[in-house]
Length: 128
Image (cartoon, rainbow, N blue to C red; front, side, top):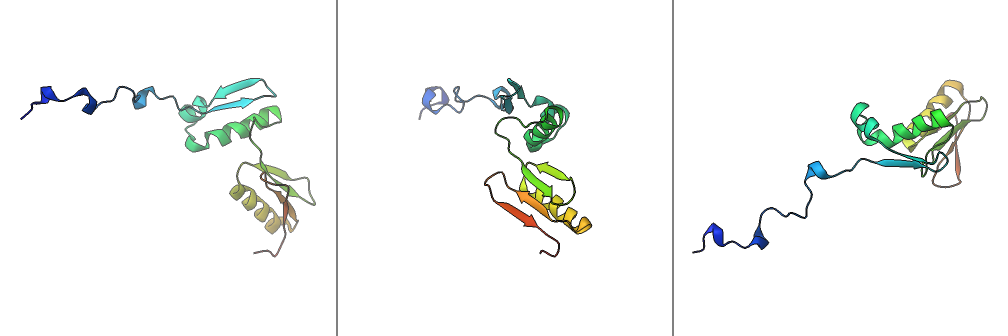
């Protein structure tokens, strides 16, 4: 019977080629070609603690401060047909919720534009 000292390195429980979780840098990075810059989202993750919404938070803040979104970010647009209300969202659910709420309160039609295609959906009173 072979002892532990006879075990080959091939069956070692620790593989040196796999980095430890402490050495993995998985901080997302956002770029903006209009600004000519890139940012790591450490602030959103560590200080604001927004987790998987870090990119959304950064993109919305970036637009608020610069007037445009960073690269590869295209919003959903909810545009009221009667009043000057237009809101931008980075996912469908809040865009649709805003449109439906606006229609319910004002009875104005809202055009809902997806970033995925050129089709516009009209959200109107009495739908659902």
